[in-house]
Image (cartoon, rainbow, N blue to C red; front, side, top):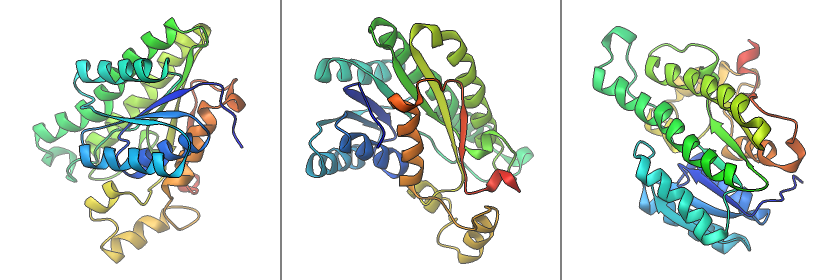
Length: 255
């Protein structure tokens, strides 16, 4: 069982999938949760699940991670409600349109970069500022992907953004480690989430089997398996881990 000395975590994209499961896992270990999402209904459902299934408290904040003032409000809510921001999980993201690089519309490229990369930077800068004011610093995990380490056909914007998240993670970890802020990334393989379902990769059996075969374990991951890695990176068990890009990928990168 991972151990936590802090009181509060903020999770972006907390209204479903990996974000929801991560919030639940933190709550099960006594950490209060700020659930941030553009999806109010999904975020409030996560809050209700946390309050029904754990002894922790939870608060929903509607946040578009591309909007600096909304991200700042998320951080302020954690401090106002729970006294500090000890952990942050920058998980919000979109898959984007599946097209060959030369055929991808410019507006779709920009939207993916704005949310998946610039949105992580917006979160980082507000979270780091708060953690620097705290005596005990904090721990941050950015949600990257195996596509932050390798390419993938028809996903140029997503792949570029996730490569950028890894560079941003490593740079920020070097800048703020001596100030007590650890910053890491998780690189999941393909996971059974609403985002993957919306991309049509779960409903089409042929596509699903092809994606599964790309993993050494020949299956998709689960949100709980990714959440476990996130929690470990934030926990007191990982105090010498910073700047890491941890692949939880069922052997995808081993092929």
